[in-house]
Figure (cartoon, rainbow, N blue to C red):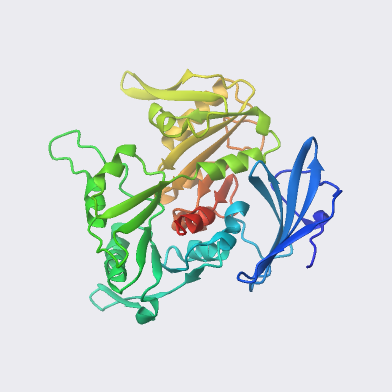
Amino acid sequence: MAAISPATATTAASLSLPQFSSSPSSLSSSSSPFSLNFKTATVGSRCVRCGVRSLENPSGHRSLDFLSNGDPISLINPNSSSSPISMSASASESGSKCSKRVCLFHSDETRDLAERIVAQSDCIELRSINWKKFDDGFPNLFIQNAQGIRGQHVAFLASFSSPAVIFEQLSVVYALPKLFVSSFTLVLPFFPTGTSERMEDEGDVATAFTLARILSNIPASRGGPTSLVTFDIHALQERFYFGDTILPCFESGIPLLKNRLQALPDSDNISIAFPDDGAWKRFHKQLQHYPTIVCNKVRMGDKRIVRIKEGDAEGRHVVIVDDLVQSGGTLIECQKVLAAHGAAKISAYVTHGIFPKSSWKRFKLDTKGDPAEGFSYFWITDSCGLTVKEVMNKPPFEVLSLAGSIASALQV
């Protein structure tokens, strides 16, 4: 197997590469086109396991993985044409653990994410749909090789980014389970109407409930009800909006954030800030190992301002965590109050970067060491494909891919 020189490997964190003291042991599988070589090494005071993975795929990418307590850091070969989107190394080995083969269809907007999912597992095969329109604007759709998916496990990767694309995708979602497939899974990384879950005045329409009812009426496949995979749905009570004819699987992007934080050079000086009590309720248990700061909005006359409710930002690298961002006004107000209370650096993470009307442009990179003027990092996932294309390679933004998490969920 070709070896990767540690000198040519790169990572977001600065690492001191170890010397190996034991003979390598190898693991190979005749049923999967990859092989692994493992060695034991010492990094500082910790013993870690290092594996060089060679994948026999068209891209020919190789990577060097350091595993410590189950949390890998990937060192990607810079000579490969790898994506600037961070991937989970542990999930990338899901091909060796697959329990079923899955045919994955996708919308136009989710093509890039679908390709990243397929790259994570040898047990997921990419399939395509012809997305056309008639002269009157209504969808003209065709599922390629429809008879070829009979008896197969089938999934569809959707993006309900606007009402204009929901109808055509729902048409496909309702058709696929009826093609005599063994099971059907709808992957909807971002549940788009999640912020419209309350009826506060007579006449308000809770569109989150409406969408949940529509999805709950997807026809059953031969294997039973449809499975729905979604990430960090805005309000936890929305899980009860779905009927018994669908099986919602609620995933989170927070593990991706935790892996990224562990790779930062100042990982021992990080505090997590929540912009309101709702975000704290959602995420504090997953991030309980970090010091916590909780902000809230208070009314001052005709204005509502953000204040720190509890926690200390002095001298810390503070990471603001929430499920989604739209205009970004609340995050910017949090940034200002945290900087005023002595934060050394400020970053942000949201699972869903929606950013209507290119509102991401409000977030600047901190280039002068002044956290009141910019962010050190702004992490989002690739749940909103249109946003990813806009912010790619534009600091402070970094994209953490859900591909590995989705690939694993499709094996359930």
